[in-house]
Image (cartoon, rainbow, N blue to C red; front, side, top):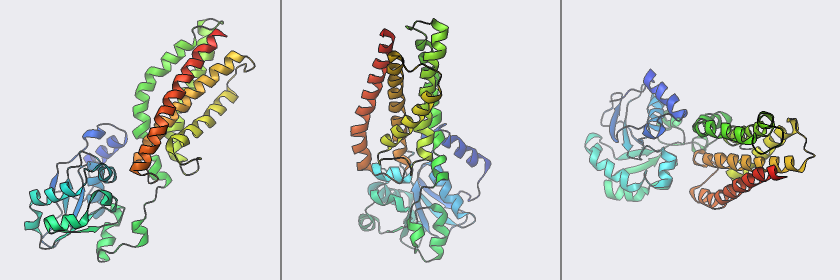
Length: 329
């Protein structure tokens, strides 16, 4: 039995998951849950065992009563699990039988999230379990109204939007993990920037090393912050390309205000090299948002990765070569 009222533990768990702390272990056990005080006529809703999805569903119902059938999606949210096959027909049919829900409710209707549709064959579920699948609205918050309307969704309930607030809440999931290895990379590039040039270690570190650090930070911000915030307005369709575009703009701003003599060929080559590394970094980080966006499909992500990953590697390698070669000029 679970409550539809948010408690402190659930709120803290949501914050930790959003920050990427224990994200892959944030799950609930698969099975049947009683929300409130359901009876044989109460609706049966199906969701993933990613606890954030489970909590959003039960909190959306508030004081209402319902049965919640939780599938084993390996801790993955509904939409991604449907694409990967863990929120699928076989798991749903198996969970119906193992939970005994057919002995608990008098009706034979399941309410599934609309975004689970790619993974579920409704006709096979009915043939193998006797339960009929009804796809609910996109957002859990619309479920009470959907049920009150006789299981009928209006156009707004069927439309998934991706507003600024929803894009912004994704930022910590990519930004914070990236900070862990950036904490290693930044000092390394700062120290290496002080080696091989002619003005002495400290002066060179404060010039060449600092520029490298700033461009790396620019790539981090471009890929993990600017790209999701400015997603609808950045050029091109591919996420990696959007991240690269944001990084190019940020790198241009940094180099425009950085006090350096760009008349020297060595400084131009060095800046070009670090800018390429920054672009590769931003493109990689931006590409990670494909799994959380309404703009992509599984096949589209695969096509993008096939092109973008080799391009990112090539840009990073060329950037390192140019950055090192600048010391020889």
